[in-house]
Length: 160
Image (tube, rainbow, N blue to C red; front, side, top):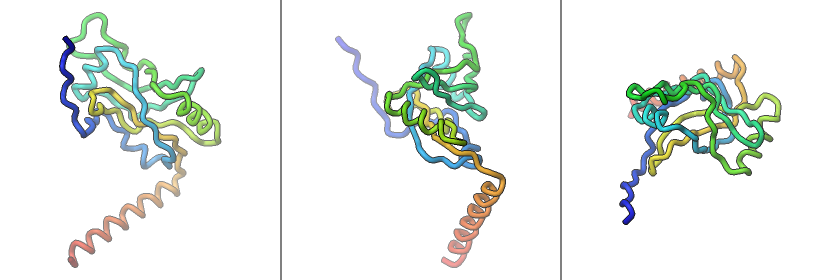
C-alpha cells in the first residue's frame, strides 16, 4: 500500500537569499527552476545553511548550471559528503532555457539567482532573474527613491 502524502503547506521556506541582487541589478524576467541536489546537500539546506551571494547561472549545451553557490558540507555526513562549491544543474523546460540563452546573448544581461527555497511539496527550487547590471548613478537613484518613499511613509504616519 502506498504511503500517505505529507500535508502540503502554502508558504515557501526560504533557505538562502541574494539580497544584493535587487540593489546591483535591474531585474527584468523571473524564472523558477528545480535544482538537482545530492542527499547531504538537501539535509544541509534544510538546516538553513547555504549561500548564493556570489553565485550566478550559466547556459551550457542546452543545460543551465548554478555556479559558485555554497552549500556547506552536512555536519553528520560521512565520507560520501558533497563538495560545497560544485556546479549544480538547474531543471527547466526547453522553452525557458531558450529564453535564458537569448536574454544572456544580449549585451550586459546575466542570470542571477535570487533565492533558494523549498516549495509546498518540499522540493528545492531556485528563483532566477534575467538581469542587467546597474551603474553607480543608477544605484544612487535607487537609494534616493527608497529614502524618499521611507520619508513619505513617515510623514503620512505622523499626520494620520
